[in-house]
Length: 80
Image: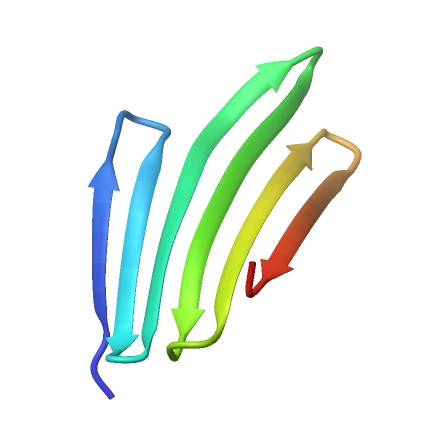
């Protein structure tokens, strides 16, 4: 199976990725890049994907990075 990946850089830290695997699979992903707030690094991201004509997914997430820990929290909405 062939796969097509397209990457658009908005600036040095932000990017949009589009991935097409077949006629029934498509994903677009936005990565906001790393931001620093109160000595913590944050990376916000979101994606939309579809698998077939009846399955749609919307995901939002935040990745928190500290010198002592990391946390990745995601929310997924199916067939909204």
